[in-house]
Image (cartoon, rainbow, N blue to C red; front, side, top):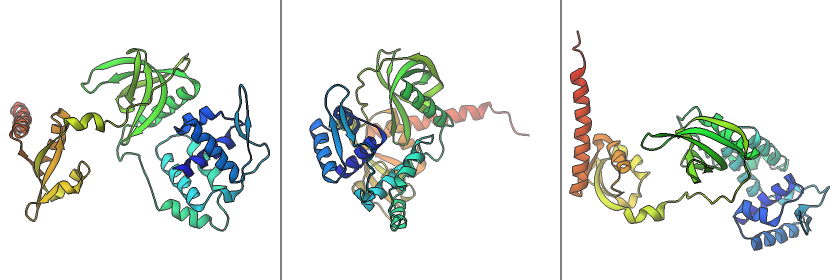
Length: 319
């Protein structure tokens, strides 16, 4: 949103003496033309913006200026407080708390309680209920590597369980679906990769520094890539797992089937991940068709049963 971007630009200029238009455009992922329009809007709001031309030039707020607290509306401040409070639950270190304290200084004395109440109306906690204990320390290490342009090394476990030793130039931390990733240039693969922190072992900050290179944006939305692979299958589910299935497809795909069950048109891809997902629903979910998917599920169930039967046969008799 434009208002959020304008607030972000003001905070950036307050924090730094001078910032180039290109750096602002890259930070907020907009065009140079948009940044110039934003500067006009900020100036029109009464904040004296000065442009310095030439090498090392950029935009800056005139020295000695103190931002009028009325520049930010109650909604602006509530949104900032809510966002920073949510971020502090996931990002280690004092930076979110310090930023939160700075924003609170903008709260008008007579409206502080109202704005805090608005901020508390939306609570976003991105931290998992249970997660790897390495995540916090690994985030601190990667943040240090990002700030100092230093290499990191670690052993990485792929989705097949294979381990490789990686040395990586880190460029960006990414939070996606409750999981942390680092986007970096992998010297083992000679290409950019997205690494999941929970698959790293023995992360270390190297002494060696690197010269940053142009880093592409990570691909975080794969809908367009997987949508052609989707096909609908029919599931009969018990109402007790309805909330879990609703996380995976919309209610418009549900049809009541008696007082306790639903038949669901479920978007499915013929991959291990989707079979494992269905099996995780246990005996409260039955695949009605197509026959080939039902048969593959039957084979997997038999394999699981056979595994437990074999182990049960090897156990010593109880006495």
